[in-house]
Image (tube, rainbow, N blue to C red):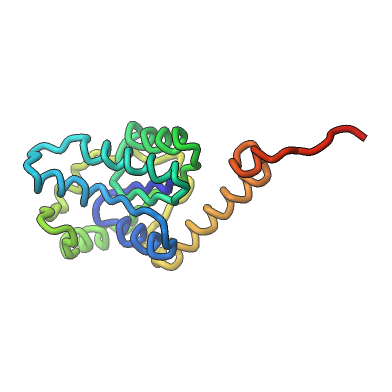
Length: 190
């Protein structure tokens, strides 16, 4: 399963995504900020879509190995969201789309202005840049988490519930579950 996060900087995506990865040993955590900064550190001045492209490739390979992949990125527009869906589809995996937001503007701004930078070399983003950033409403997200009203534990519980729902749906529809689709149904008739 691919869990593709989306949300503006400072809403709490990385905190939740890292906690989710810690709760699922063996999962793969891909953070676009880390990938893009690694590219800058190696002389790529304008990373453009390269960070996302690298993450898509790493996600696809790990999904094919049967690993849960947690993709932590702003994922701001339908183009990037569709790309994550396509990555999962190409790997024969499901995608859980998680949007993280912070409905309390003052809290969001405070987080942006005071958060610790945990990626060496990554420049701090300003509140003005966050406000100006292109971000389309994520109308078809499977899970929406408002960190102004929900704790990390609540967010993890909401995601776990959605994962469980996806797994139950796969078992209810055998052709969607690779292990069940290959089963011999046995003799037919009387």
